[in-house]
Length: 513
Image: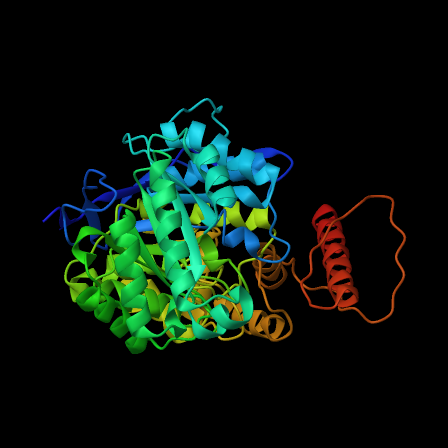
């Protein structure tokens, strides 16, 4: 078996590169090495053969962020943005990149062609501000989508043929509702169209052809077996089974994959794939259930973006396999998970689709802890509330315990955070700061480091109180500064003013004594 569990050191790079749509900004972080307390899955990627995977436990990851993901309303990306994402997807280790739908526009055709030429041949003509693809020599398959007609297939081949491993992905609907109302075609006509167009794609010189029966999740089983058997005979190498409208239940979708595997003639000569939409929030569960029942290619997108409610999320599917692959019979991927966070940030920035804070794996709160009980556990042992290491996905926190202070935080967490900021306080001083902190946290959702520094200054480092503010006007020729903390800017300013007055009086007292 080409996978093993090992304890490996994780590290943060000297320089992390982040891309904005207009400029490229380099964000520098400190170089530090630290052992991960979690086992890391080490895997060897099998040699690529379109219709065969030598290791039955290996899962191909098919990323369609640049095609289905871009179909999200408002998510249009420029050609250079797509190229940068494609480079990072290669670095991430995805097996197949569906780079676009060449027939949809001239711009999309040119973008797919550029990705095929550059990323599809591991040509690294970019500067150091762009993530390098596959340092291990991995070159991904570059795929273009096409409807079942010659014009679409011609344009797809025109775009992807420059890649070392080109693929054409063609599709036609097979559910009763789609055939009747959208296609206005009979079953016989649909079968003939699918068979002839797969054969046509192969005749162009493309040895890697994927076929999808659109809306397979709502299609008649016997009809699916028939049409899939015909496209296999015509030369299809991958059969993708889409739950196009996200309607299937995990057990239902898993059974669909199992039934196709058991009843489709010639199925042993192709790879079964899944493509699950998230309309009922079940895309990740359906995808994993498909893998458990025999699918060996999983179609996903970064951040789960895509039509309507989106697609199965790459980061969720990959990390679920990494954490629970033993329960799925030892399934594993070739993904280098340390590049997940960067991929998420790039797609978020370029697509304009913000990641929800509580999004699994890559959300801002995914490795943050605010509850006092959770914070206490994290300070004692990270395994108490974290099932994976943030370093494993490329996230390096400013503090190892991932504490986020708020109104639910306790003294233990506050003391630890203050110590991180350089304040070693205890006893009455900690108690005073804690109760001021709680009053501020009741009114403010996020407590920043600056807030804590102001609180400590206000409660611990204020000069001896000579005056308390009542109603006073002071005119002085020398400038004194003070600090104060409060949710109300007026109260905060008054406290700072009183602190400055007390500092002035304290210095005067010293000078006269």
